[in-house]
Image (cartoon, rainbow, N blue to C red):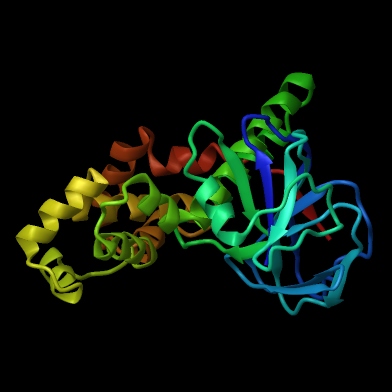
Length: 307
């Protein structure tokens, strides 16, 4: 696994972005470009190779393609394919690439190398914020990465130098969100080294199982805690009750569905584990400050390219 490390106090430079959609038999063109490219698949399967590394990207998976390295499709897609893409440049001279095997790669300018443990420990140093980006990985179902992608695409449609400047900051926020998600557990444990590992496990489980119908008592039994004790300890380390934390994960997942699909509000409510559509709508407005319909409408200008 390759990791890109760069100084996050310096915004990246945005180049372009889009949402590619294709009905069938899409094959990524062969090319070498001078920028990094981040691809996040929403629907279908993308087969792509960069250098000697091959990737099979299904919904929820992403890849970062390196500059000055040949990349190309290895197999046509079958059925509908949709993915977000963006090209960008790191502006910091403190940008490096490392592997867990302690080796550096020649596909990017390397100013330093780090072991994998050194890489993840760097993330907790708030005085030195960093982008730490794995070349490929999976997004959680309630990931905000694709929501930020949709925001970036909205900004990319605006003309003028100011919009381009805004896109660079939006791009930077997207990469920081990706960093945070990829290292969620390690970051959580580093921020509070006294947190019980079982609580960290539960937080991760709730992120992945936000649609669960289990009660707090049933969740407590599943993780081997007394309900009262778990409720108290969970709030101590997360600042939320289990129910509120779970609802926040549901709303995060709903935001993804609102920006990336045409599902009705009732269908989205059901998919995120809330059976009462009206309760879902009230909950969404409470957490986001606007209605779910208004939130969806705010992303209606996303740039798309259909091939």
